[in-house]
Image 1: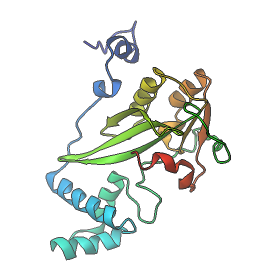
Image 2: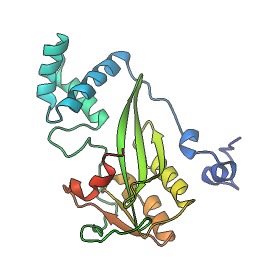
Image 3: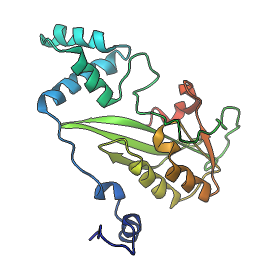
Length: 218
């Protein structure tokens, strides 16, 4: 149905016409070794219970709980793959890029009193039977209504664009608030907000509470 070689219609335009989610067109299963999946499941359970657990402590826990001697480099690699970092306000799904534009936090002293005044968004990971998926949700800050969501097996910005496109089909806010993750600071994402005349607001670095309302949802 999708013609990847077409010079007249972009893949995005074809998906819009057919009502197909673009993230499904670009989806490529990521191969993960079964032993790594089992280890990642254990890391996820341990980190969820004790979010202060770092690499060295995780190595000790694998030995104490599983009786397995594991190299700390492997644990560090898996924790990075999962976006986990000890003593951090949330799983590290947020990574900024220096070249991307950053915007001030507009909602810190803002009186939010009605729907569609501010939307907020966040990304988290979901443990699956054979690996992990990432979930992005866009929510109305006032009503806490989830307007749209999308999933992906990578942290590329495409699935965030899909969620934004879907949300804007129903309404639009005065302000869109997020963290400084590269998905939100990408030119495609920011340009779409600006084209819709939506003000862009972002949490300051290290200020996890600026976007805390989106955290319990995703």
